[in-house]
Amino acid sequence: LEMAQTVNSSWGFSLVDTNFKSDERIVRDLVGAAGRNANFVLNTGPMPNGKIQPESLATFAAMGKWLKQTGRSIYKTRGGPIGPQPWGVTTQRGKTVYVHILDWTQDALTLPLDQAVAGARLLSSGQPIGVTQANGKVTLTGAAKQPGEWDRIVELTLR
Image 1: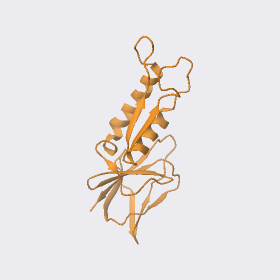
Image 2: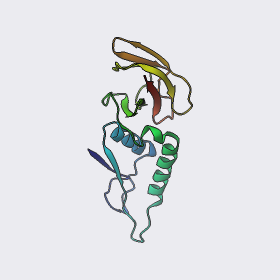
Image 3: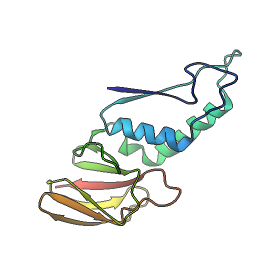
């Protein structure tokens, strides 16, 4: 599977296309692709002088900054054990599951996961997250996405 996206609305350079997608939207699209086992292709066309538009460069820089902080939840992962949900997606590498919370504002999030969880923490700070398990479900407390946060990532360590 491959997800292709443009930085604005055009597949090549267009002087009149100023409809640039937000950095948050591009990152969320990248996360959505990773959670679906998809490659993510981001397209921008060079200007007639061969250079890339400053708006595209700014988006690439923002993505790079985000990936520098959270890249281990994307790089060398596969789609996680929980398929895409209204709140977001999961990715996985080995015994680590990354819960990408894109749209969730409640404190507790219940996941359909019957694997034993040894621990949970926020990827951004390492702060522990509350975990309870019962009847094939894992409930995370402290999972609400915070204002200005593009993707709240909870790192679950499986037993």
